[in-house]
Image (cartoon, rainbow, N blue to C red; front, side, top):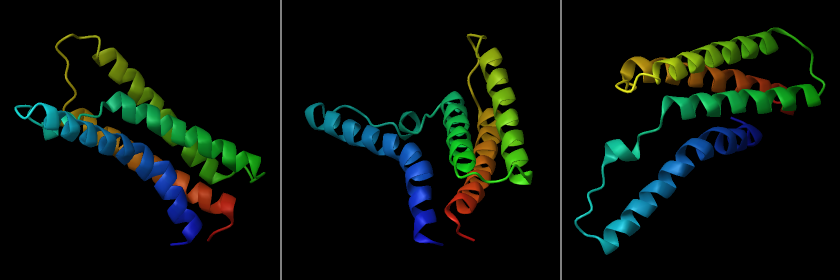
Length: 137
């Protein structure tokens, strides 16, 4: 993998998702120093809402569209794939908003699995777009 693409993955995928988790864990550990009875809950630490993942994914695609068209790349099947990913994510996000109106609704694996699938598909499409923008093939 090219160094440019490693950097892209780091700053556009790993840092936005793992960074907040790392900071949260540091704060929980610091809190435990002053309050030894405090129990660190891994489940609570990893509790990333599907809505947050949807928002991140839409932002990722949007920023890649900006890079792609700013580099004056052609409108091709890659743009269509990105647009279809974006459409699927927005529609799914709308359903999450509707389901969340029920006070008893809690996101389960049935919600997280398609959210992660859409996230991974979007990262893949954006990665390919970015390779084209940076001239890495």
